[in-house]
Structure formats: structure tokens, C-alpha cells
Length: 153
Image 1 (cartoon, rainbow, N blue to C red):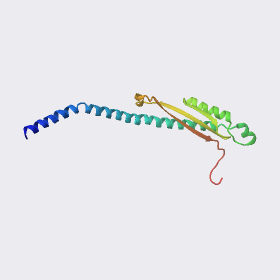
Image 2 (image 1 turned 180 degrees about the horizontal axis):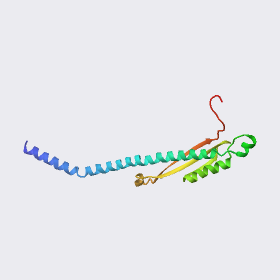
Image 3 (image 1 turned 90 degrees about the horizontal axis):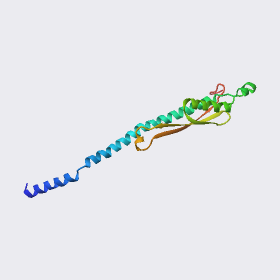
Image 4 (image 1 turned 90 degrees about the vertical axis):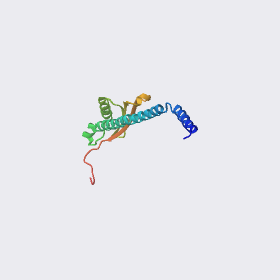
């Protein structure tokens, strides 16, 4: 190798060393932020799914509790089974209050009740970027069924 080529090679190495200074730190910082975002999606996404399931279960159970409130006066006097709307709404609200859930109950016909529940859960990792909680709202309807029902009956 000639002296001129060696000088050019050294100059190229010196120029390259100066240009690459700090690029590894920048790349690691970008990768850290990306990994933190992925961890937030996994952990706090799981919290969102859990909130969805909890809201759905609470809405279903509260609706069942309400739909089971039979109007006893009509059942004894006429033999018809209908939901006592006042007792049904009170039973559903009582179930929600006892479980610490936020929700509403309303009639959905003569023999049914509809309950809507909202569950809010705090975030663990996404709170670092300002997302402090995730919430889920689910609804369920329960219908009073009287007697034995099935195919051919």
C-alpha cells in the first residue's frame, strides 16, 4: 500500500469516527421507548381485557338478579309470571352497589331488565405517557322465563 492510500484510509477512519459519535446511544434510546410502549400495550391491554370481562360479568349478574323478581300478586291471583319492575330495578341496583360497580338498570320490556355497567381500571405503564386509566362499558339483558321450556313443549 502506498503512503497516499494509507493517509486516505486513516483520514476516512478519522472522519467516520467523528460522524458515528453518539449514534449508538440514540438508537438505544429509540429502542427503549419502543420496548416501553410494547410493554405498556401488553400489561395495560391485559388490564383493559380484565375490565371488559368484569363489566360484562357484573352486568349479567345484576340483570339476572333483577329479572328474578316476580310480581307475586299477579302470579298468585292470575297465574301469570311477570317481572315486578320496581323490585327488579332495586335488586339490580343493590347488586351493583354491593359489588362496588357503577351502572344503570332499566326495564327492557314486560319481563326483562337491561343493566349497563362501567368499570375503570388504573394503568401501570401507560400512565408514564399520560394514560392513567382504561374503562370498559358492557350491557346485559335478562328475561324472566317461567316453567319448563324446550323442544316440543
